[in-house]
Amino acid sequence: MAHSFLSREFNDEYISETSGLDLSLAAMACYPYPYLPIFENNVVSWMLPLPDETEDAKRIKRSSSMVESIRSNGSSLYSGGSSICRSSSTNSLNNIPKLHFRNHIWNYTQRYHAAEVVEEEAAAMINAEEGGNEEEGNADGMRLVQLLIACAEAVACRDKSHASALLSELRSKALVFGSAFQRVASCFVQGLIDRLSFFQPLGAVGFVAPTMNIIDIASGKKEEALRLVYEICPHIRFGHFVANNSILEAFERESSVHVVDLGMTLGLPHGHQWRLLIQSLAERAGKPPSLFRISGVGLCVDRFRPPSLFRITGVGLCVDRFRIIGDELEEYAKDMGINLEFSVVKSSLENLRPEDIKTSEDEVLVVNSILQLHCVVKESRGALNSVFQIIHELSPKVLVLVEQDSSHNGPFFLGRFMEALHYYSAIFDSLDTMLPKYDTRRAKMEQFYFAEEIKNIVSCEGPARVERHERVDQWRRRMSRAGFQVAPIKMMAQAKQWLVKSKVCDGYTVVEEKGCLVLGWKSKPIIAASCWKC
Image (cartoon, rainbow, N blue to C red; front, side, top):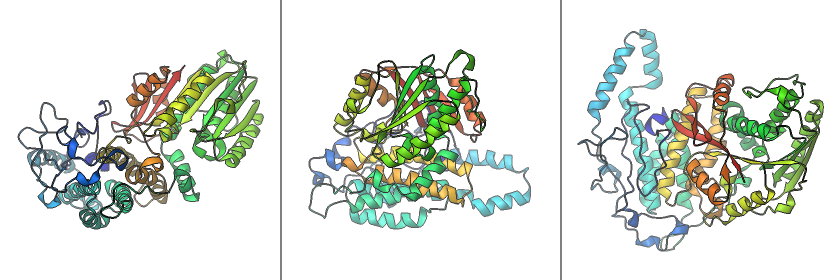
């Protein structure tokens, strides 16, 4: 599995790029772990920062290597009490020191084979045909990780000739329809190719930012991929579930309620999140929907009354699409016996003004943000602070925030690259568990949704880089500085019940972290949901 190469403990504190990135063998100890670059304080000074954060990239010398090795005398990753040391290896991939985990791997392999001797010969033959030789597979996976990291280092140092040579080998190994890690590696390879092509000619200083924008990428294929992600992966549905339950609690015993949706449900057709909320409101009115019930809400319907007026305001630039969704929602709510009013504010989050949102004194306001605010996180932070200020002026009863829980906005390119490799390896590993290798739905999600996020993180800089995901602890600090207080989410039991009733495959978990709920895959955080009050 891809995630066996790149896993991370679920409850570990965020480790910055300048102190190194820890990796774990706890989940899948049978795989040998490749070397990883260690960004120690004494080498940060010669690392190549991002183009928009460096003064003179030409000072970087190719002779300074960022390749780090793990010494055999007591060193381990997440094994406890051991140290990670630098070696004097050079930048050349051929000089990467070999690992000294053979005894550990051998012992684990023996236990693994001992457990398999009871299986039928036919099953062993099928496994041999499909998976190939285990040792060769491990070696190929380790080699692929080494190539990726070495190529990322070469790209960071703007060594186009060395990076091109590595990319040539990576293209033959990172297969779109290969193993889970080969598939995710293919996305990072494309990102590295794009980033390399954006550099100015030799002798020039700076970085040529790509002209593409996340809106430009939206197409029929991307929309279909988003729909498949919503239906198959639990990430977005988990965010909708937590958000709707928090909104329902805020609406308790209120007659007039108003939701401001930043981004309008990611542009998903039919307004799935609000259909589920309308169903819940109808249930509380004693009029259960005829289609199906929302799973795992876990709130008593007899102590609530439906609002006499339910308003939704969608914020975004896709006005025509939002109005189509609004018309469908109004008709749907009418059939459910709910009085719904829908309106649209045509504005980006950066340009939103408080007077754009029409509110009334007798209504309860809730702001809903599903995977939106990370796009406003810029180097200057002014845009995000402006959005926070506007939300504060609206004085909502609660702000629901759902974001990817990973650090893809660090100051150094290599740090972001490694964090993204951790994160998306876990996602591709989950897809490998849920869908067959040649399933077209899997390919569409990987290539037209997740791959676009990966390429934006790896290849883009400046305003073009919009996938600036951050950890929940960083969001907590940002919200606190903006004057918000956490409103603890107390629905852990309901969330676990939702996982069961949604028939999410084994491997997904939900944990509570300082009042937030975090959905993860095999101990790797994926999505974090939190609530805030002014």
